[in-house]
Length: 229
Image (cartoon, rainbow, N blue to C red; front, top):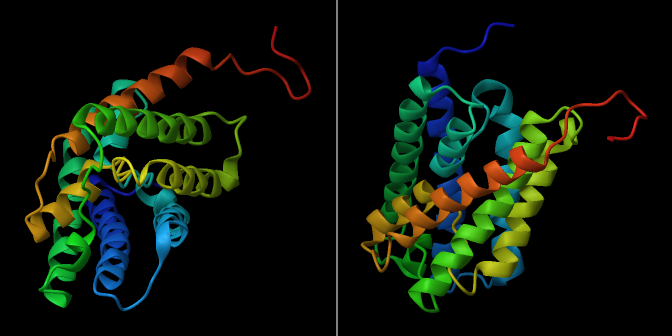
């Protein structure tokens, strides 16, 4: 089957990132307005299930990066062409901004900062958490996306699961964004820019470290049933 052209793949990334930010930001706004009490486990489930569903829906079309940090890490480790990276990143940020503005239109009083990330600890600790959480995410992403010995058809479950895990661990510390676009859309819509750079620098560094770490530990493929020497 012929791979979709760059325009179609970019549109797919736009749609997927829009959907993710709309779900996460919309859930935060609904809870912030006092319409429903979700709590941390439900917030984590919203993000994880959205990622899982979107990977199943768009993975075969664009690769379902849905995250500029993931695109950058794939590019650095030569799993994605540099010539396409810029288009993906623009599409992801555009999708996130569009979703943020849609949530703002629905909730003009900006409850819950429309899902914008706000660190509850020192800048250094928040940055460390964003780096490590994104590194863990990217380690899993690279494993299931590039190594045929990994889970294959269950890749979406693995990635959605690690998103849920990361949010449970880090939401109370840094907000557990792991995604510059996911942070940018709600920040722009709500005007919440407190230490925003953390949510760009942390995920980009973390994703790159996670990808490089998996590249380092992966072994040459072995025949089925054989043990690596």
